[in-house]
Length: 426
Image 1 (tube, rainbow, N blue to C red):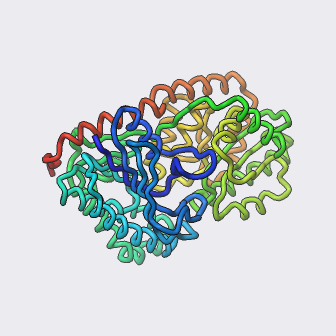
Image 2 (cartoon, helix red, strand yellow):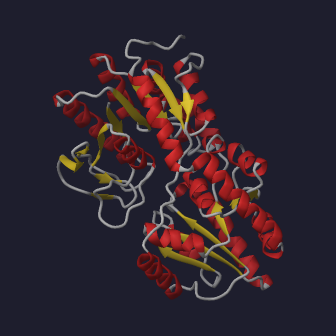
Image 3 (cartoon, helix red, strand yellow):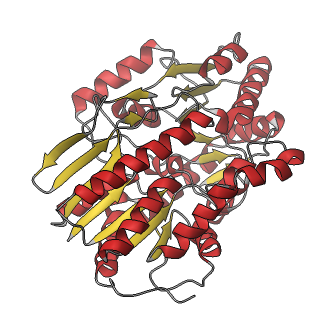
């Protein structure tokens, strides 16, 4: 089976440094190990580092059955901006042109949503070439953009976003099947498609690969952490790693406020907040004088693994807006893989997951005192922490281990590839 994967915004296996592959990268490796052929259509623009990989289209070969179509796009500075919309449109036009030139045809296409523009290219190609197309829903575009404007202005924003709403309806209704990172995400897509769920519409969580790393690399990573303030004993160490963008702006300021309150109280609880992004300097400035919070910037995969081993809990500081309340972020699987209980501000699906499996706790959005209370309770109850850690590791093995998730997804793609003439019932 030849699978086309269409996804931007993820690290590539050809990127420099010790990259952590995300959903598409890990799925591609899983498909390759199952004997399938993979072509990944992606962008020259590195979303996380806001930098160009190349200034032109490029074909990269990982091995004889795995290649990357890296198609040029203009790039952007801010995640929420006109330039990002321009980037997505320009990139989709170039991808469409390159796809129509391609002679090594796919048996099935899996396209991530976002971007809406690439989804349109994928479903149009599929209809024109008799290829089934699955949309894998990762973010609820364009709904999330309404959450980025004040509620009282949404009446004015909706007409501006009308073309995107129409595109969401178009692509979801023309897709052969819908997948998503949670069942709630699939239901969202089905609502846009205007149809009921078929047996081809399924959810697959964000899996995580927990591979052992070389001892020498881990030792070097631990040494790095000792140089940035993790060489002292603490009652509780709270870790976070990810993009420090507007998505979590309010909640990260809540975390900083909680850190300051804990320092004043004299509690020996440390926060390690890793990553780069447009808000990093604002967070560092807000945390001045807080000796119990560290902002080391971007870190690689080995440093992440070492940090999780040195930590007590993993932090999930997100606003409980509509899309996040339906989601289980990828950091949940990463924390669980290391047996880390999760302390989260998310209501909805994630809150229910942590509660039902007793592997984490939820504090109130924007309430630093709520976070402080929970952290102090956890720091004083080692038995409770041990129980939640065991439950975290167990839940990871049962539900979020990438080997299981993406093996199942590979079998599913084969199933869809055999349904070329099948159209979901409305």
